[in-house]
Length: 292
Image 1 (cartoon, rainbow, N blue to C red):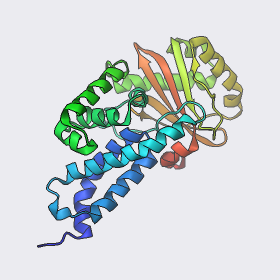
Image 2: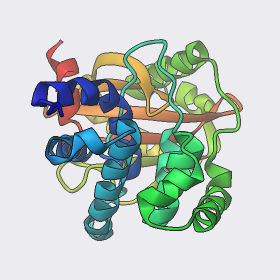
Image 3: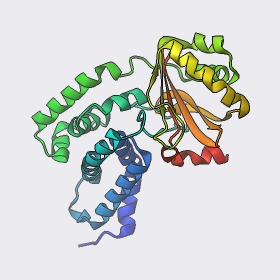
Image 4: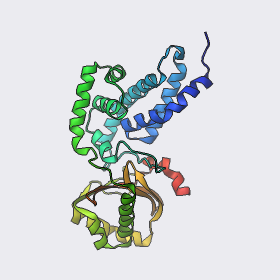
């Protein structure tokens, strides 16, 4: 019998790593935690009886999902004491060919689900894994997994993206928003925003940020008016326009200096939500943009 070496194990694992990372990130909403989970799954793959594994992809999906389910127990308790709005760590799309199947609003909606509902929905509806394999992964019967996924869909129905805006149009609105919000052109900014627009800023208690969402056009306008002296004293440095978790947005360097991402949820040509991530712990994986 041939013993599979560590090199052979890595040769099988490495092509699966991006997909495993996608599963872990969508389960946890954290890039750094997802990377830790995937690395732990590799260590368990090294320790496994790999000769007996007929389908490595399915085997590794099970390991990653179970590790994520265990991790979510502690993650949920931490989020209950999180300071201010919680946003998932921003994932920046680096090429025009990338397609984001889970947008930021949907990731936020996933937080309303139980861990098992979340796993059943993601594995079956997003990653196209049949319910028999989902059942083996999460330790439930296939019929129960169907019910879990069905409840998840019902809870997520309002958050599913109803249409896909052309990327070029989204970037145009993002560019216009950046220019108006930083230059103090209040009327231009007002014209971009929906009447029920909201701003969610994640500082995590480690960067200056509103502790609650700012909701309503007038309140949002007051927020940006209050920021104008800061922008005037220290101009934002635009680093990169991109899709951030499937939404048009941009990366900037703000006063401090602090890296920041801004993602825009757009409906009928108007910005209905602005998602700003300032917590430095959630931006460490994007530091290469600041160095460019």
